[in-house]
Image 1 (cartoon, rainbow, N blue to C red):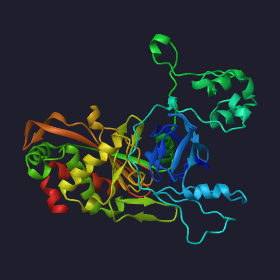
Image 2 (image 1 turned 90 degrees about the horizontal axis):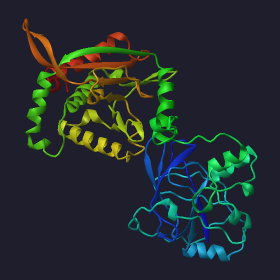
Image 3 (image 1 turned 120 degrees about the vertical axis):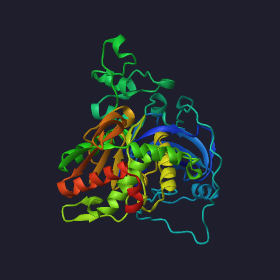
Image 4 (image 1 turned 180 degrees about the horizontal axis):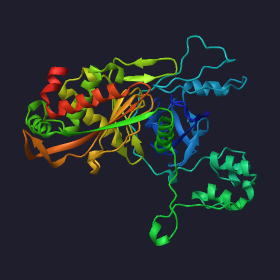
Length: 434
């Protein structure tokens, strides 16, 4: 029994997602709950589990293609006993909602009576097959469908053709296996076709970078934040010589043998401690109230090939320094690999952006939506500094704190920034204030 799987909203209110990688090919037999495709949502890359067991009949979207939620992306020949029984029982057609493990589904009215004492068998998760290129997966064509045999085109391409009034049966295909592409439709309609140019200088043209997925969501969120929250940014130069000494000492301790100890670890600990000392800074603005958060969920801005993402460490205020170091390591590794979970990408209360790794002294960071403050940590470099009336060379960095002035006034923002600076000048303060 053929079953079509539609691209779901995985709980983020999405309207579209990009197909990152197929984990199965046409002809593969998959089990219930086996992950079969990776999609990029507005916040992370998510692997979808199959609600059916059976043979893959067709993959209906290419890797790299953006698909609207609700469009069919895969067809599976369901070989379970229940599916075979259903195919033999004549009854009124019904729209079925596949149940994704870990994701809810919308409940709708059903005209079918529940079978007593019968449930579909659930198979354990099978070992995932090796990834294969999408070009090897040719969508199967239902028998008796002459139109589909003559025209191979993905759902977004068909929608584009319909919107432009283009008859797909007269469009010359240029895609894989004789399929019609978006460019083919635009060419047939007479619209200009813009393509990315690999070598921009040699071609003397422009390069097209599609805005989608993480980059699109980040752009929308930053614009909304910049034009909603009144930003104020304060700067503070700090002598972090003692912090650098502490980093060297920590690297020698057994508790930190399995993690990377960097100055960012102590900056993170200082910011979390400052949030505990000044709870109103760890809050969210609403039109009716300021919501003060008891948990400090520390966001770490990470640059990835897919764009800027800000996963966060939950309950950072309750972590010891070794625990925080481990959490930082694991969080950044998952982010760079595109494996941050939706839970890690939501619920942050304050963020650090480490611009120093790019050789930058300072900047005016934009507050992550839903939060009230973000700290930019600049590069650490040798500078002349006055110590006990003498000019000496010290390790110095610049901190920049942007905050929402509706929630954090100048006095509170200054206290937070001054506390972070004081703890980096003398790391022992973290023990006294934690």
